[in-house]
Length: 433
Image (cartoon, rainbow, N blue to C red; front, side, top):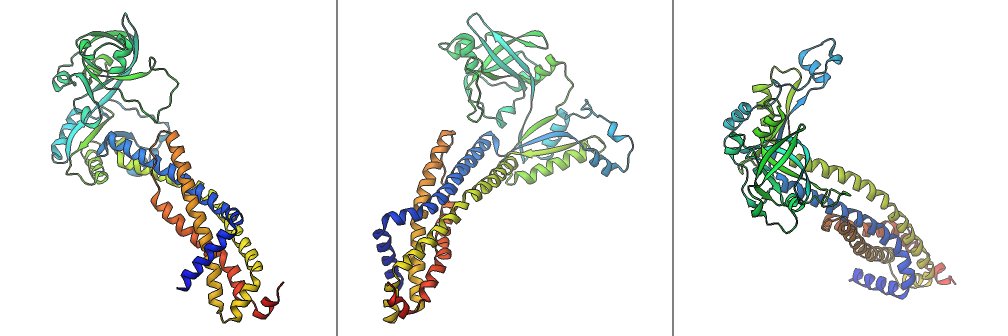
C-alpha cells in the first residue's frame, strides 16, 4: 500500500511540474531512443540477411578445393626447403571430378539429395534486329535448380539429357527477352529461337528452351539501367566446358542435403573429412574445405551484432548524462520540499519511508522517459529500415532490457538524493525557509 501511495505522489509531482519533468527525461529519452533505433535497424538487417540466405538454401553445403598455406604444408610434411618459392596451380589432377562426386553421393545416399555444379563461361552481349542484352553465361547441371531458386516462366529447365549430350540449348531470363525482342514479346513465342553467343572470340549458336523470372537483388545497388543490366543465362555444363576447352573437373560444387540432416555444419565437416581422406590425402598443395549458408549467416550476424553493440554503447553514454540530470532535479525537488520532509518525519515517518518515496519518484521519472524513448527509437529505426529496403523488426530483448535499465538508472541516480532526504534532521527541516 505504501508503494502505491508513493507512486501516486510521484505521478502528481511529475504532472505538477510538466516542463521540468520533460526536460529531465530528455536525456533518458534520447539515450534509450538512440539505442532502440540502432538495435531496430540491426535486427531488421539481420532478419533480412537470414531470410535471404534461407532462400538461397540454408541446408546447402559448398565443397571446394583450397590451396594450403605454407605453414599448413610445413606442419603436415615436416620441414621443407624452397617452399616460399613454390607457386602451385590448380591443374587437372587437383580438380574435383564427376567420379569423386558420384562416390560421395553413393557414400551418403540418405543425406545427399542432389549435387549442384556451375561454372562461369563468360560475359557477352547478344543482339537482334530489335535490341541487345548483356548476359553472363554459366554452365550448369540439372542439380543446380535444387540448390538455387529459378522460377520458370516458359519452356523447360535444362535436363540430364542436355548435359549428357552437350546440347546447344540455353535458358535465359525474362529481362533478357524484353531487352532483346521488346517488352511486348510473349515468352512462349521465343522458345526455339536461335541466338549467337560469343565465347573466347568465337560465336556459337544456342537455342532458347526456357525463360526464367529475373529477380533483382535488393542489396545490390547499381547505377545501370534496365537495358544494361546483366542477367544469368544457363547452358549445359558439358557444353560450357566444350566451348571453353577447359580441363575436366571442377573447383567447387554444392551439396543439397535431405531433410534427414538436422545439423548441416556437422555434416559439412563429415564431407570435408571424407573427401580429404579419400581423394586428397596425398595432395601436398590442396585440400577440401566446406562452407554452409548457416555458418555464413552466423558469421555475418555476429559481425553486425558486434558493430551494433559498439555503436549502441556510444549512444548509451547519453543515458549517463540523463541519469545525472535526474539526480540533479531530484536534489532540487528535495530542497524545495524540505519542510514537507520535516513535517513527515515529525509525524513519525521512518527514514526508509522517506528514502523509498524519492527512489520511486526517480524510477517513475526514468520509466516514463524510457517508454517514450522506446517509442521514439522504434519509430526512427523502422523509418531507417524502410528507407534501406528492410522490413522493420522489433528488438524485443532490447526493449525489455531498456525498460529494466531505465528503472535501474532511476534507482541508482535517485538513491543519493533520496538518502539525503531520509537523513535530514526534522527540526532543521521544519526551520528551513
